[in-house]
Image 1: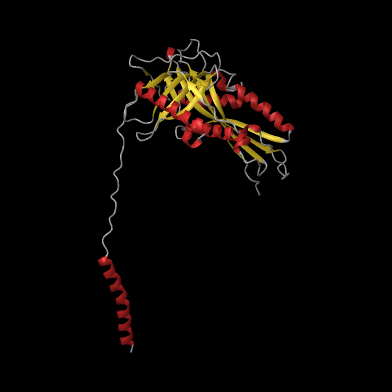
Image 2: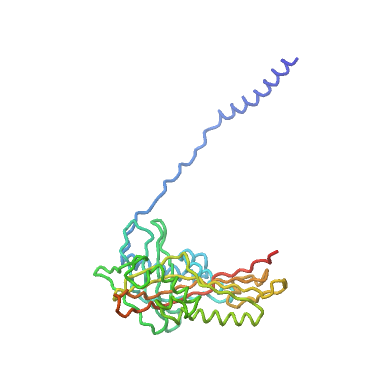
Length: 351
């Protein structure tokens, strides 16, 4: 009995299998698409003509995005700190119900370093006059563009506006139109270019008594930020708040060009971070107010008793040639700045 049951079970198990096998045998094999070959464009040498073409392309594409109020399209042409500022600009315009500003540009002076055709990132700097469309005037801006890889597009990394009536350094170009790039570790100048952001951040945080004042001029865009912070702290205390502000370096690129007299023109970014907290943390109903400068970055509510803001700031500085011992040494000087609040958060109450 056991053997007959087992044989029947095997037979039952084999019948569906044979049916399925026959069905599969009658089915035509499916055609599977072959994977498409990946295409990597040939590297294009960075030349002054390429830089001019890419500058014009950016201006045209950015204007299309601004005319349409299309933040997503605008961000396709921006990177690094400029991407953060572009997003903040579009959010501010949408919050206020205003159109995004549109700009016109004069023909630029292009500072194009000689970079190997297969070396990345590639970059160049444009110095030009920018004006808001439909308005007179305008002013000079430095614009740094970068391309991260052979398959990437050129994007705007940084824009900064020189202080009015500031004498800007000349950046020499050779007979073929190329400028000289400098390593960020170059020691021929007073401050190695990669350390210029840190020196400025130290002055902004510590004030005129900082040792950084020995190598960088105080005042506009340096100790000015320290004075602003102290004034804001006093105002916060009057409202039963604590305020801490610090300026720090960013992971964004540093662009350094050889200027006249052996100096360096350095373009870079910094982040200025502020934290508001209530003076009495045991009062779980107290909340810091939302400053008007960041209301477009929040949903109108403060979840806990803290408010954190971050400004993305972009600068250009003149880093002077280091002179021999006994000669009069010039200090580094901040020439240009731009930027605004790019981020704000209100973390929930801690248990």
